[in-house]
Amino acid sequence: MSAFSLGDVPRLSRSTVDRDESVRVDAARLAELWARGRVIAVDRKGRTPVLPDGTGVLDRPAGEFGEVPPDRVVLLGEFDGHGYWALPVDEELTEGTAPPPNSWMVWPGGTAADGAQWHDLRSIGGLLDDTSAGLFTTAVALFNWHARARFCAKCGSPTEPANAGWATRCTGCRREEYPRTDPAVICLVHDDDGPNGSNVLLARQPIWPPHRYSVLAGFVEAGESLESCVEREVREEVGVDVRDIRYLGSQPWPFPRSIMIGFSAVADRSATIKVADGEIEEARWVPRADVRAALEAGGEIDGLILPGPTSIARQMVAGWAQAD
Ligand SMILES: [Zn+2]
Image 1 (cartoon, rainbow, N blue to C red):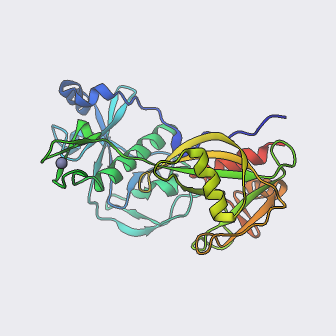
Image 2: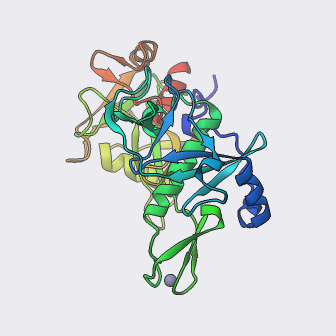
Image 3: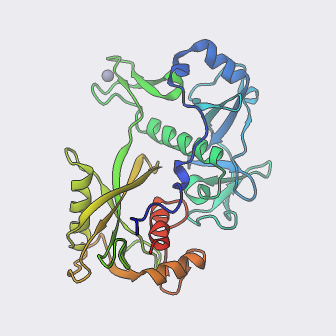
């Protein structure tokens, strides 16, 4: 019997575009990629127009946005002979549009004057095809970074974008900065009843909707290894010691700029659970049969709502549930 793995590739880890770094500083190549370019527009709330069933982003020909790349446009990469770009826009939307069926109801979207429905990545990322998922995830990650990188971290002067959006350069000291990502660990803790256990430790935060549970997660601290972070976070959040920490996979989570690094670990089911005040409302061991039932029912049964399909937590739980 082998150790379990992620049930599927995490939904926001899928990508098909070529991220050739050398193109970003090659003016002639950039001009070619703009001439054959497609543009994804993203509004200030991180929403983009999508197909009615949420399976793809609706890009537009670059020529609609000008002869040359406009300010603040970023190059996402090249795919199938096209340059793919993203542009921050101020679009007037009618607010409150319901997300497509089977999306992760996080926030309602908006509808543009042309009837297109705009939705955010967290809501529809699980539905998107591989190319759209990679494009939209990268666009959101870059824009969220740019929104927080407008001033030099060293001297405080304003910065300007460089390298087709993949760097900023300080207008004072000329320091360059590259897109930042904050590592966070996320850990599925199971008991030691067999190599994959028979129960998983799920917890809920007080701000979550009733009955929603997930695996444990937390940010990596300065000077800390990923493994130490897993041990510390689980101990802090539920008061339990873990062992046999094992890497599972990762997924970008650009809200605003994390990458979730997934692990499994083992704990004794007899250990006393002591939840962190204010951070965790409740933690409990859930049998595999209950998790399977929730997955078969689309993600929830009475008293147990699993993490949404866009999250790596969902893939972790699904992978564990499939194992014996
Ligand atoms: Zn500076």
